Length: 182
Image 1 (cartoon, rainbow, N blue to C red):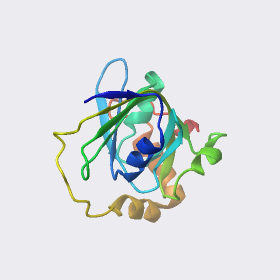
Image 2 (cartoon, rainbow, N blue to C red):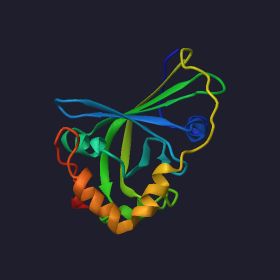
Image 3 (tube, rainbow, N blue to C red):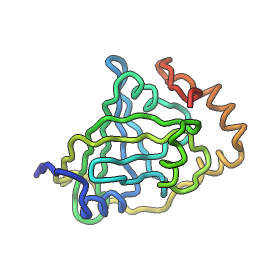
């Protein structure tokens, strides 16, 4: 059943690193709650017992960054789709750090070299809870999709920045994302 943890220990870190997908939930004070799947290899890092970060790659929307500008609340969830059942939730506060920010390089060193990097979302974890996961289905992993990577490579850095201006400066709700502010 549900259990609280003081920090991300070696066992929890191994569980996080073994998962092929995780989910990110954010919300402003009003409007939609956003829930996004994430998970390309090399896009998540455990930085410490109560600190994690993930690459926020260029995509169709930028809801996470927009919500974090209004409210820094964030929840990350990892589910075991193979092996023993388990769900891990990390509750905390987050901030989106743009590619032009002064601390970008130091944080980017924790991730793979994926094209289309637009932000790193740094999370200070306030609460860690695991639960049974008995109702989560067993699934077989077929492989990573390469669609986003190929799309970003084809666009190139200038094309990605143009895409940010056109498609990522505002969220689906019309909220500013800060993507062009660094």
